[in-house]
Image (cartoon, rainbow, N blue to C red; front, top):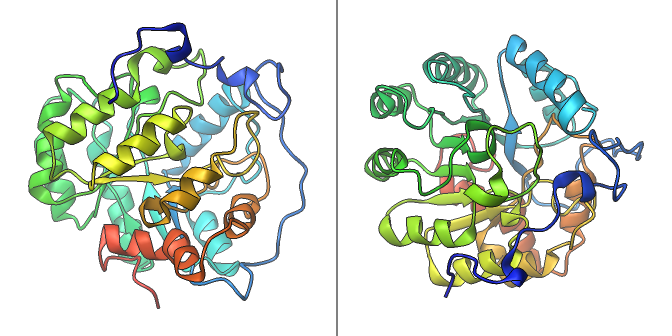
Length: 321
């Protein structure tokens, strides 16, 4: 059973700037000049990238400035239409578009933007966001659902909250009632001192355990395979039928941490392929190639690379062509 940490062995790993490709390097981490593929390999099943970020231009520019100082250099400085054209030209069949509001009052406008993009591009599944605790949070999600958005994205690090924040209760309940999968960056890593909270303290697998127990109809996706609590999230996958993980950046061998391939190989039915594109410091297909190389049966490769996303988000921009 997962419990709050009480021993030294339960303490978080060192912060992100000691977890990068150059261990011990100060922020920002370095980019990798690795070779990129021309397209999705012909022998792979249809690929769904379940973790693609789309923002209005001005928000992308602000993110790039933040990443330059506090995280890593972004290799693909593409705006929304460029992101979609790039991935489509390389054979990615579908994408799940994620975004988040870093302060109150932003969410409704961002949701309307992504909804318009999804209407223009039927192969895009749009998701909503909301700032936990802001006035009218439930109404914002209801309006987003009415716009056709098919999930919700929250980021504990950026938005400065933990999964056990009391204000999250109304959001969890709304996601259950509206049948919207919630993609919530609730893992402790990657860490940056520029975040408004220390996610190594506010985030923990045992807190997610409580959320899943208290909200059994909530369909929750935790990105980055729950980094860095891989054992904890492996345990949660066995306990809760309403939990999924995505692979984003963790299988790419960029951070100097354990590659948790064993977690994917053990539960390929509960893992989604995702990348964080375009906010990457390495080749767009680095994670894809490493995911495809795992010791998985063909049916499990299909599930991880696309089928699980189709089943989770429904027939809304992620069904196979």
